[in-house]
Structures are given as structure tokens and as C-alpha cells.
Amino acid sequence: MKIIAIGRNYAEHAKELNNPVPTVPVIFMKPDTALLKDNKSFYHPDFSEDVHHEIEIVLKISKEGKHINEKFAGSYFEEIGIGIDFTARDIQQRHKEKGLPWELAKAFDGSAPVSNFVPKAQFSDIYNLNFKLDINQQTRQQGNTKDLLFSFEHIISFVSKYITLKKGDLIFTGTPQGVGKVNIGEHLEGYLEEVKMLDFYVK
Image 1 (cartoon, rainbow, N blue to C red):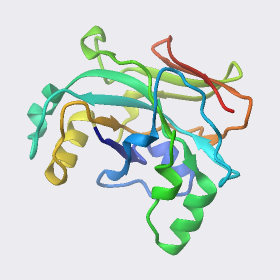
Image 2 (cartoon, one colour; image 1 turned 45 degrees about the horizontal axis):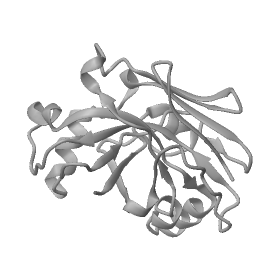
Image 3 (cartoon, rainbow, N blue to C red; image 1 turned 135 degrees about the horizontal axis):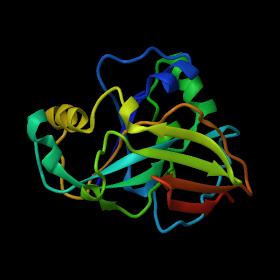
């Protein structure tokens, strides 16, 4: 199982970090040790003073594929969930300034909390899905999949040109605007269409 993530896939998020809006998907990866399941607590790492939350729709790949045609890409995922791409923003900024990779900022242990997954078929339109992150019962991020720069099918097709997708792989599809710092003691709750999917604490 691997975790593939898409950066800057919502224009307003790219703008809030003063990044250019991409013309092709921005790809990075997290190891399986980043995965945090079953609403387990997130332990704030001591190597960063500025860990940011980034809530995202997550696709679970349902079968192996390579060089997938975009028009068939929808058949490669049957379930979706909610995840958070925790990012050590201070480390990321230093690495960006030096032209270095993002892995230390993105791929650390526990940096990818993921909810349970639900069938995409239960939604009438996967391109009109509301999702949000509440911290201490206050909404910090709110997004809708209609604002995706690159569709789920385009992402799957694009990634599969370079990396074979296998059953069980997870694709984080990008975060909307409103990212910000998390602090020890905070209570995070993630929602998909008003259904609570994530519920855990920062320790």
C-alpha cells in the first residue's frame, strides 16, 4: 500500500500559500508509516513548531492499473473517505527555499490520518461533495469537490503513467483553503456531507 498525494489542487489554497496555480498535477508521496487509522491520536512531532492541517477527499484504489485512460479511470476506485495531510510548514518552507524535496515536511510518521471508506455509489454526484474540518467545534476548512482543478479521473490517469496503482493504494486529492496550525490538546473532526468521518485529538 502506498499513499499518493496531490498538491495545490484547489486554486484558493494555492493562492493562500502564494504558490502558482498548477497546470499539471503536483505529486508527492507518503510512506505507509504515515497512515493513522481508527481515530487514533496524532502526536505532534517535536521537530516542528508549525504543523498544519490539510483536510482532503481520499480515494481508495480498487484494482491494479498502469497507463489508465482517463475515460476508464472512474472504474479504478469504488470507495472514498476523508484524510488529513499534516504538513510541517516550517520545514517545508525551508526546503522550498533551497529547492529540496518535501518528504521531511510531509511524510513523517502519523502524518496521514484517514477515515473509514464509504461507497462512492451512495453519492449522487461526486463532484458536488461538501467536506470540512472542525477544530474545537469551530469550522476551519470547508471545501467542495466542484472546485477541484484536476478531476479524480484525471489524477488517476496522470499518476498511472508514472506509477503503477495497486489495490488498496490511497490517493489524497488536495486540500481547500483555510489550512492552519494545530496545537496539542485540540480536537479535530472531519465531515463528508455532514457525516462525521474523523474524530481525534492532537497530543
